[in-house]
Length: 334
Length: 259
Image (cartoon, rainbow over all chains, first blue to last red; front, side):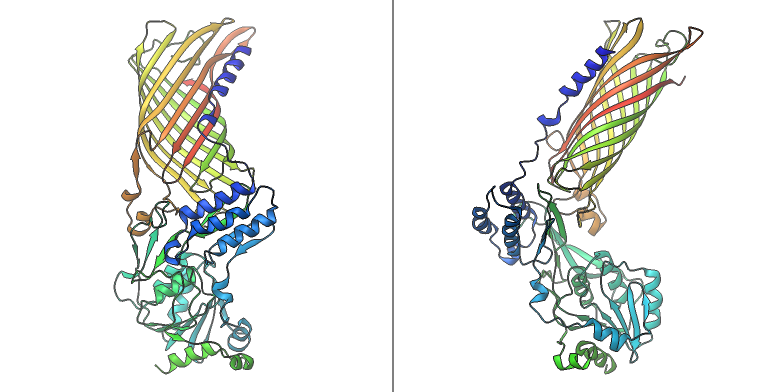
């Protein structure tokens, strides 16, 4: 039996994968910085579009990193470097903080007041058809959809739209909707669009396929294939906090003749986020694809509304939502 | 050459003997899959395989292996877990090339090996899934040596398998879903094929077949054939994202003669 054990032990030792697989580099600030910079350098999708000199950023931030610095100091340097990407999909998550760039909505008026909608428009008797809050207001169907993370169920959406089909118009309020599942954007858009063909081009998507900043696949077209046409006029309410999948949804909807976008420009977020992690356990996300409109323009910086409206402070003080009122007037005067 | 369950001498001279090995194994694994993470993950897993061996008139040995495995990988840097699940089939045909030594046999041949392996890292946003879907054709060699020790019969064998050409599908460079599948319903533009430069794998299995004895009133009434194996595997696909995996697997099996 000893011989058998010896034989198996020899086989175990001889079959060592260390000859093939290199161990991770030491977990120190310099190696973590290098891994973060290199991963973003290879896979981030908007360097050229945003005219960011990532090598120059390396030259500026790398001297600030040394192996004696604290995790907090390293986090600050990394956060500052990532901030230069000007991208809401970019963040760095440590056990003590999350670095992010929220300029895409903080630099602009909010244009949405949840209390006003809830207290002065929805009231106490609105319907909650998960994930929507809805009510007929002044003869117009109002649907509030707060997040594309909340999965849309066709079985609940179809009866709701069937009911609103008879109305002069439907307002879909996606203000402060910061995104979620892209599949939800495609599904909702295909339910609310006026069918202009069996297969309607609504945009394009490009993927990184190599480490150079401009290594992209061709732009793959994205089509909607609506089962039935929604002839009713649809107004979509937007503000700067409409981001990512919600931004994509607005871009898709802008193609259709029965859709009008009212409010502020959307926040953007036109790249699918991708995740990475560092030797010290911190995680980070960044954009790795490019979402494009039907003219192949990148939608990273947002979608302009058809009718630009901001919430007026005096209206807000009176408890009136300027953007919603504009949308209702627009539908009722058609 | 295999040791079947029997109350008499091994019936290796039978014309078409067939054997079934139902193997349970425990593995220790190392994984780097840059489609999920650049970090090295260590894992432990279980494996089940069922293997059929068929000797055809001492001119051909056919092995059919169907296996399933489940592995949990963890990383020292954080508490993240990659869950891996695999299914594979291997059809090997081996021909005896050296029969001069009565107790030693050498077989050489080839194999066909379809594999499906999926890995999940749920803390990632979009690239939470990685997969290796591949089919390979390769060369295999089996060396067997039978010997007696302390009046007991053993068969020691070593089988080495190396794929020569492979067709495979991995996540694209910076997105989890094959682009052509997502946008055009086609697979072809994301499929890759290649030899060692694109897919390298090495599988070495050392096995020991032996008997345990079932006795009644100090008389051997049955010899139970068993196999203990140690398998080492290393596989690597360098593009579009580096994937390396190494595993050490210990398996135990009863050897059942089917004829």
